[in-house]
Amino acid sequence: MSVRTLPQVRESLGGFIQQLGVPPIAGRIVAWLALSESGCDSLDAMAEGLGASKASVSSMARLLAERGFVERVPVLNRRDSYRLRADAWENILRTRLAELASVKGLVEEALWLLGEDEHPARARLQSLRELSESCAVLERDLSSLLTRLRRSGAAPRARPKPTPRSSPPRD
Picture 1 (tube, rainbow, N blue to C red):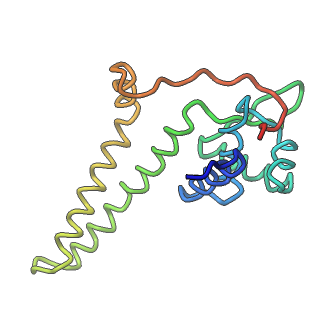
Picture 2 (cartoon, one colour):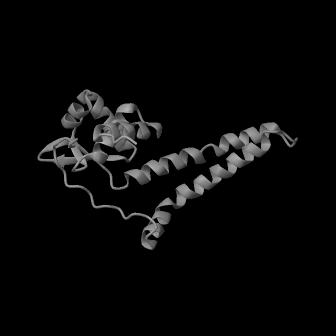
Picture 3 (tube, one colour):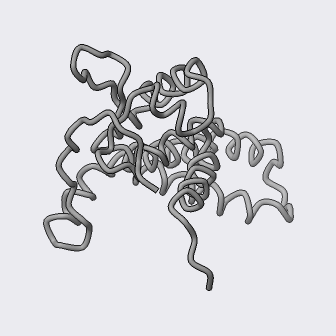
């Protein structure tokens, strides 16, 4: 196994985040903040480090803030710094669970259209409906489930929020 560099890992993490339903630059911003020393950086520093325009980084940071993944942090009279929210990963999971839960309506419609007759797709659709219902329960109970797991020691505890800084991550 070859050893990868931090920028390579950052790109892979950004690609993974992108698969969770955000544009490529947004995934790269999340990866940048996740791997930075402080967990907080300015739009200028992120734009420079990511090789992207400040306008693109700014609009994607706003999108990520709307989705609950990052938050704006005032740093020395500047309003354009961001950090990952302490609950960013939980919010990503909650978003995915909600998406999976939302398919139930489509499955119900498909089952209704199949009617009462036996159909080869019925068992597959019923299985998808069960998954959707399970995801809805998980989404609803996620906060309490994570709290119970943390208390039992079965889940890592949330780390304190990082101290804001304005420097790019070191490679």
